[in-house]
Length: 190
Length: 428
Image (cartoon, rainbow over all chains, first blue to last red; front, top):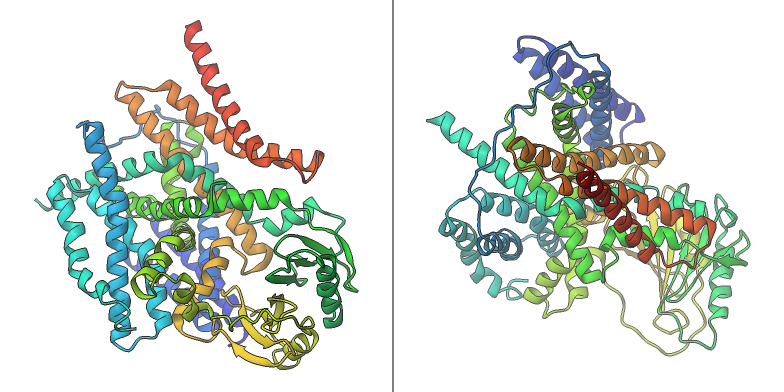
């Protein structure tokens, strides 16, 4: 482990990165130089924290950067507003189509349990793939535990953005069916 | 053409964001509020029992005495399968011995002082972990809501192309719908790394029954313990023949001698008083996200190796880091304060999300004042339930049924808000 100075340096860099972004995004015209400098400083902070103490350092630097941004937000919130007529926000309206209860239930089943099942099948296939390519049993098993919580919401969101029921089923069934043979031979590899 | 496609994606993302948000909002809010309160789990325990003996460290011989004193109290009843000694650590400087059926605080000499009484902290834990439902259903449900926070984060970003450009714009002093939208979007974007970390780790914990169950079914003939053994280590074979209780002193002395930088936080005695008994010591590693490393010893204190959570496979280290990253136990009070503030921000994001939807309905001419009142009732009722149960705990004591009191308070506040709306409607 490197000296404690590096983690303090990383924490300071993360705050500096947010300050630069605040300055950059507060200008009338956008400055790609300042933007790059701001994000670059944040990335450097993460790298320095990672070099100091791995995930622990990165977690702390992330919290520090978010706290710095929070302070700027609160300062912005406290600013008096220029007097002007209040207007409702411009919000995009939602599609007007109203679905029947049956269709809503079908959508729920597809985005919920079926997407979860598809994610689990893909995760189990990944596990087999990792084991078959020489990965350890621990890494293969943790892949299943960690992959499902990530894949399920993404699949769920993806199918919710689709209007065609066929397309929704295709998105879920194609990868799941492709992975199923690998899942069925689980245990043969590990 | 490209702009049309982008607009289409934005519209669809917004629709998906609204759909998921509306389905999940009530329980998601409850999970966020209880999770924020749970960051102070150790502090709540100290508040519930301020008189329990506290100490910075405890001698190995006192730990041995404490274990034997508690086991002596259980003579004549079925032998516990596990005995846990919580050792004093900065966040909870107490020594507590827990068996399958009871728990006691002990003093610095290992003498039993009083039973552990932290029913409210345990109630809060159960509320956040499993919504006071049976573990399989409750944890899976909470895990599903964690996954949906990930979906909401992704859809929210895709639905708002200007979300990063306006990242520092918070018109809070307008006190109108624009302010509500600003609070929602700004807090969401700046707490995004926190929200994703909390959601993914929460989901890994909550969906464990589904993922480990699937893993066990597919590769281990349904044996869940065998499925997670490669990650957290397995247990030696049982041998129930009686034997003197294991000696914990040499194991603790070995830790102090061989791993001086590691701080033992738990001593776990498996199958005490049997030939097959064995000892695990959970050691805290400074400046690591892992909850600890398992150090295995036999009944005579001979070291048998570690599970590999600190330096084993990357998957093991990752799995061992999930708990601390989720609960904010990795950096002392500053990190806990940050978790509470960002947790509150997440609660505001969830609450304002539904208000934005209600405002939008109103502008479109289909306002829902009763729904709005109901949502206000929930937003106020969920924390009010926690405050009420905590007050009851402090005034009446440990033996109170917190679950019905909590849910009754939530319901009462909700009904109160809706009734007030109905009364106003009748007056108009």
